Image 1 (tube, rainbow, N blue to C red):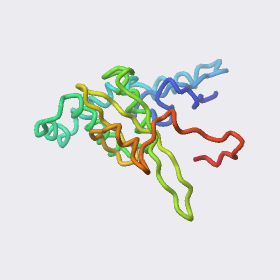
Image 2: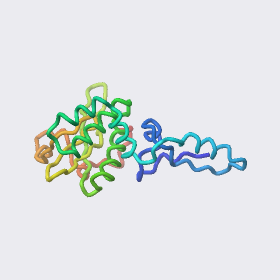
Image 3: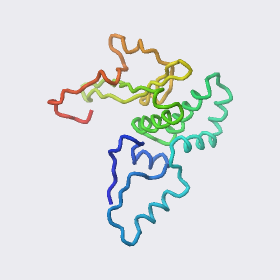
Length: 186
């Protein structure tokens, strides 16, 4: 049995597992008695396949999020996405898991044309290296918003932030690695 964790088309398999979604990406090469297939089917019973359906259910089941929806002046889409982020944070999903999950939700809910990727630079110090986290910039009702996975927030975004002297956020295509440089995981 093998687990494909490199599919960039879907939420990563381990994030799906943490989020309570069906397990996908398992390719069973040999299972003559069907034990693995039966166990996998049983595991997936009652789980959602689509991230957006699971998060809608989680939001509806969260009394705090339902109250928040009633008290805001944001658009329905922004409220939904903010609540989705809150639910993911409450489940202990890490930053890259939130990125993957929210990317799928945005693609289904608003369409892939409504989002762009950006990098957030997290400056290192003498003990840690500078790292970059993937974030999303989305457009809702002609307004741009940033899904900052490091902070776990959705906030209004102005692309002038890219032009600051030492910007925290960098357009996705402007960051590149010197491929002769040894990769250290950052």
